[in-house]
Length: 478
Image (cartoon, rainbow, N blue to C red; front, side):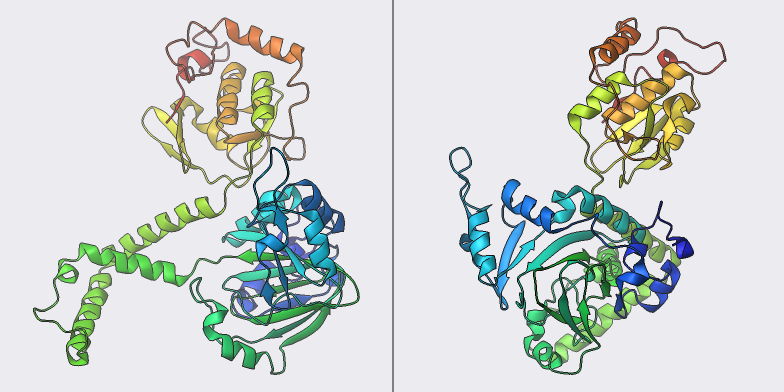
C-alpha cells in the first residue's frame, strides 16, 4: 500500500475512497465521471469510521434531534412525528429521536438516515476534515441504514458530489448519466422529475452490488437509486459541496456596482413586456460589463474578491476541530518546555506581520504577539508537532507564547504521533502547583494587562534571546 502516497500511516483520506493517484483522479473523474472501486483495490474497509454498533449507539444513547435524523420508505420521507418524541421529565423537547419508534418503522421497511455525522461521530469528523482539506471543498457525511430488500428513495440526482462508502451488508446501485449537468444548489432533481424518471429506465452506466469496503465517487447530477439486498445495509454518503465558476460570475457581476455606466437608469417609459425594448438594453449592458472586465486591473479586483469570498465561505463551511475547554485549560496550566503542541486541525489562520507585532487572524478574532514571536508562531502553525522548548525563544517566553495560543484555540496539545491528547498530569495538584510557582513572581508585572499571560520579571536571558517580560506580557486578542 505504498503506491500513490497511500501508505498505512499518513494515508491521505482521498486514497481511502479511490484507487488512483490524486492527479489522475482530478483529470479523469473529478466533476466528470463516476468511479466505482472494489474493496480489494483499496486495501482496507471502513470499519474504523462507522458500523452497526455505532448506529445503535447514536439511536439509543445520544438524544439526537431533527434535522440530524430522518426516515424514508419507498421514496417518501416520513413525518418526524413517526420516529421522534419527547424524552421525559427534564427533556420534554418533542423532536428527539425515539428508539422504539425507529425500531417499529425500520422493522416495517423504512430507511434510517443519520445526518451530519461529521458533527456527531468523532472518527467521521476527523476523516471528513482531512478529506475536505485535500479536496479544497467542504464535506458533510450522512449514513443510510436500509432494511433487507428495501428502497429508501426514488431515482434522483444530488446537487453535490458524493463519495459512497459501503459499511455493512449489500446494496444494489444503478447509476445513470445526467439529464442536467453540474446542477447548482438551487437546481434540485425535482425540477427535472420526468426527465430523471425516464433516464432511470435506460441502461445504467453502473449496475453493481456494493459490499463492505466498496466505494463510489459520483459527480453531482448523476442519477442514482439503491436497494438493500438480503440483510441490513449501511453506507456512508460524503457530500462534497464544490465551489463553482458560478462563484466567480457572482463576483464579476458584483463589480458592476463600481461602473458608472452599469448604474445608469433604464430609459424613460421602459416597458419590460416589450421584447424590442428589452433586447437592446440587455445587449448594451452586457457589452459594457465585458468591456469593464477587459481591464487587467478589473480582473485582478475580481480575483481578489473571489479569493476573499471563498476563503470566508470555507471558514464557515469547514470549521476546525473542536477543542475540549476543560482539558485545554488544564493543559495550559501544566505546560512546560517538554509539552508537544500542533496547530489545531482544520484551522484556517492567516499570519500578518506589522512593525512591532505578528498577528494570527481567524474568522472571529485576531491574536497579536510581539514581533520577536514571529518565527515561533510560524513553527507552531506549520502543521507539524513541536516541543515548546524547541521554539526559537528562551524557554520562559516559549511557554508563554504556546500557552497563549493554546488558550485561544489556535494550537492543541499533541502526542508523539501528532494526534491530540490531554496533557498527562495536567489536572493533578502537583502540576497546578508547579504552574502557580512559575507564574506567581510575575503577577505584578502583568497586572496592567488582564489578557496577558504571566511572564518572567527578568528582561533578558543568558543566551541573548528576548525574554517573556520584554516581549510577551502584553499579548492580546481582539
